[in-house]
Image 1 (spheres, rainbow, N blue to C red):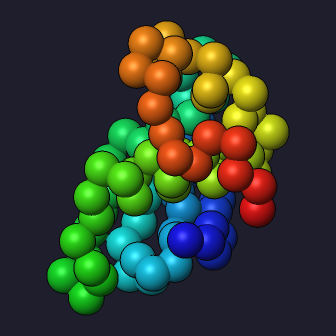
Image 2: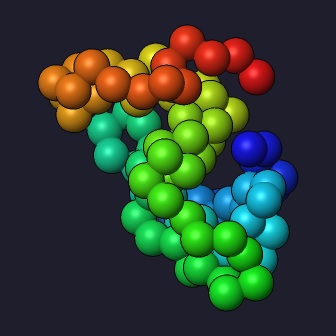
Length: 90
């Protein structure tokens, strides 16, 4: 997956597009010191977005914004000890 582009929206939201979901807008919101996906405006022209895709999108966006460290320190991530993407470099 690749982050194609992103831009700030009103109320400090961020809108992003990812490959291979070219037609779907992914909306991020900030919580504490990192960003999470608030909603996906999914287009039926794109493949179905699953949970693994959402996590990878969050990692890519936080990496882009320099908040990846805070993203991985969050309690939800620490409690589960998961993510095949943790430690992956772009």
